[in-house]
View (cartoon, helix red, strand yellow):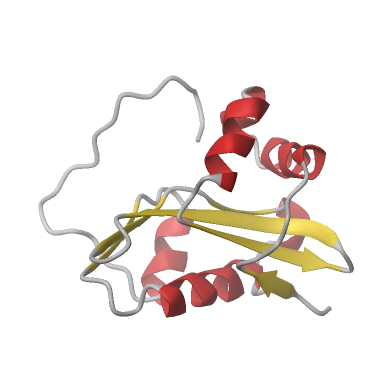
Length: 135
């Protein structure tokens, strides 16, 4: 299985919505906003296997000191095969000299991100105003 990752890939609306729905992410219910958000991110990483979009993630950044990774998802059929790790490696290479790399992880994703060098942020508490039920 050859995983092709890119920071320069073009994305199609249908393939992105299919990927978000496969993961149960509620942002798929706002396709226009989701596609605009992804395309206007500081960085967008994709993973494809035989041309099929199997992973996507984005970064929001000030371009110098701080980067936040709000979305990083892999199709359930391709999880635990190195797709997410390969996408994060590209992102971390791009932002390796930044003062802060931040994300919010829950459930099984916590161990995944810890394996990539992320750690809990001291006594900080994640907070949000959120209009969805899941991601």
